[in-house]
Amino acid sequence: MSFSLLWKLGMVALVVGTIFFLSYIFPNVRTPKWRRKIISAKYLRDRQHFDLADQVLEGAMKEFPEATDVYHVYYQYYSTPEDMKKIYDIFVRGYEKTHDAGLGVVMAKMLVEEGDLAKAAELLESTDAQEYMLTHNMPVKAQLYYRQGNLEQAEKEYLDFYKKLYPDAQNEKEIFSDFQPEELIFLALIRWELKKDWRSIVSCLPVKSIMEEDDWLSLYQKLKEDQPKLTVKSGVYGPAENLLEFRKSEIEKKIAFLHEVMKAFM
Image 1 (spheres, rainbow, N blue to C red):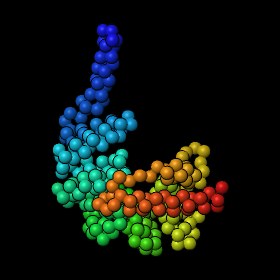
Image 2: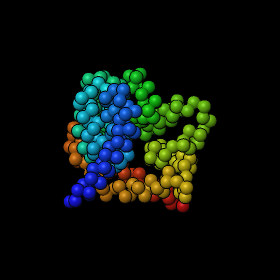
Image 3: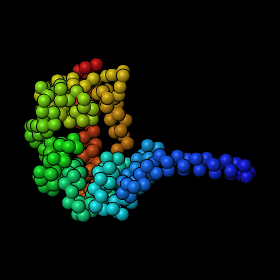
Image 4: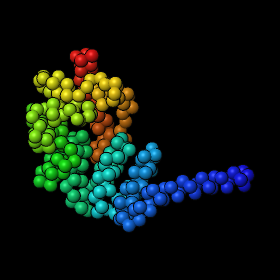
């Protein structure tokens, strides 16, 4: 390799490094180191380096085990949903260090999927946990009731949750019209299983939209694409096969429901 080419490559690397420093590091030199780690992880995520972003945050949690914001950012963006034991164990360690109600809610959400409903319910009891769920749009208690098979209570809890968030809304259309299909399918699916009127809740969002992908058809297509790719390396603490079967069952129910939506509205 010629000297001129090496010099050019070196200059490119210097420019890229300088841009990164001026854009991400210099403006934040006085911020706590754990927060700078969050900024670095965001930089990596924006450039599609998801595994590296995870590693940065995992390192930050080991170095700063009481910095709860790092855990919550990690939960939003972790890129290995098939390795749930690793993720759950991270939150267990954080919860043991901080007793943060938000970390408990995250753990409860994972336990609901795993099927450990009694332990999940304990983590959701406190006032702080209920406040966290409201402020972070996490209707985990409704999901708990659904996992128990108590569909009526799941529907009621879900509606009560969002009526608290939108107390001025006059009807369900006003509450749910800004939702994404991934969020609203929970309530629509419950009503479908209860043989109630699910069409009214589906009609809060477009079935097919030219202008955007936040429609029921796009979700239907995405789930059908995701279905054959489902894989689980580990459950929270049970056999991986149990979690895989649960996820398969859930995606199959959603696809079957959305097939009915397509027939009814298209």
